[in-house]
Amino acid sequence: MNFKKIGLSVAVFALAIAGAFATNAGRSPGSGYTNLQQVPSQGSPCVYRGYCAGGFTTCYVLIGGQPVQLLNLESNGTCSSFVLSQP
Image (cartoon, rainbow, N blue to C red):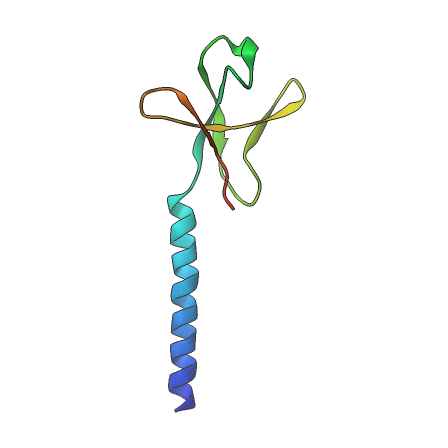
C-alpha cells in the first residue's frame, strides 16, 4: 500500500515539474528589439538587438553603457511595450 502512495506521489510530482517546464518553454522570449522611446538615436522605429533566452531576470542589452530592456516584435512590425522576461 505504501509503495502505491509513494509511486503516485512521485508521478504527480514528475507531472508538475514537466508542466512547469512546458509552460516556461511556451513563454520563451526569443528575439529582442528596442524602440525609439528607449533609444531615440536609433533612427528606426524597431531595431533587432539579439536573442533573449529569458530566465529569472529581465532580458536587456547595454546601449551606451546603460541597460535597455528588450521588447517583443508585434505581427504588424512594430515593437510592443511587452518586455521580454520570465518570472
